[in-house]
Image (cartoon, rainbow, N blue to C red):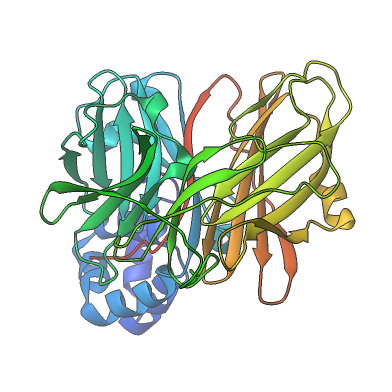
Length: 392
């Protein structure tokens, strides 16, 4: 990981300090800043490898949320940018060429969870899992649906779940409609096998936990007035099909998903973890001069039969994030009652990113300012939130 590399004289001077003080200094850093320090000298490596330091570092790092953005011109220039509000003045840069795995120019960033990151190759049509901390690489065998190109993966229809004990294992889930029936596909890295299970229709008799509660929700399809999702437990078992209806509160706008482009629609729907964010805008023809008008948050009802209105971004906060744009996309995740949304827009070649956070417990919206990612002239090839980066 690049950036924040100490010079040799500074490293020597730091080594003269008491070890306990050095540990406290290191603990004030985020993990991408700590890892390069292991390479500076033996003393730093011993401190960072100490079990007490690892435990203290991981207790903080595991709860830190990151936003990862993958941008590229060609492979040797491809960079995974990482940002957290704990270090709010800059992005960290991870060069894909430094990860030492054979890949092609047509690489797409799918998802992240803890130390694991998934990339899809369009040329060889395979999924590659990378542990960014240990720099180990694992190629995932084709799913029961066969090799898939990057266009087949839908952000809201898949999920990467790392093992809770921090071990070197993970599960990769995605949902698709097969013969008009929603099916859950789960890859287990420990057994290196896939399992597919047809979802059972939700009867509403036993009830589900649509928001929070540790359940996983994967989008399958979204029609003008109805969505189709597959819900399963955190152990990736008992897939249930839920079909929430949507009443757009007096508006004539139906459901949609993906990019907003030109003046085809006047809103964008972003899905994730049993929630839906509706982004509205006004003004401008063919995408020119449009500005955000409002952002609404909806969630699945308790019985999973409809989308319920949750909250709206306050007008004073909307004034802060208002910017003209031509095209926009987004991602949305929920964890421990906190919803995080990233809206990425492009206006005449200039990229802009907005990070919004909503605390469901106290009904509070916050905006996380993001520094300039300097993406003009680059292609964005994937975005994801993640948390749980830890030292092994």
